[in-house]
Image 1 (cartoon, rainbow, N blue to C red):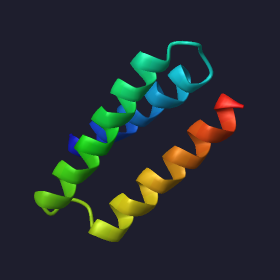
Image 2: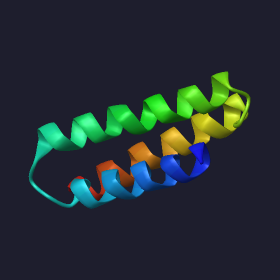
Image 3: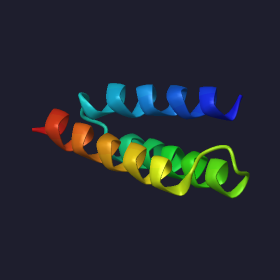
Image 4: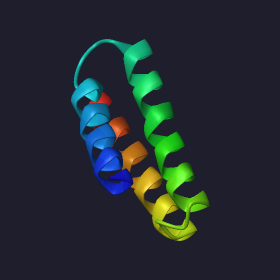
Length: 66
């Protein structure tokens, strides 16, 4: 269920990235990062996997924001 919530959070962030609401985007991005870190601490994701996911999400947001 944690992996599913991470995927949902990432989709929400990407959806908000194409919009204009920067506050909602930063809040959603923070929540997505938080979920990844929580999954690492529980042993669900490897730390490098979480880092890769967060990095790719950030690059996608920057690309969509242009």
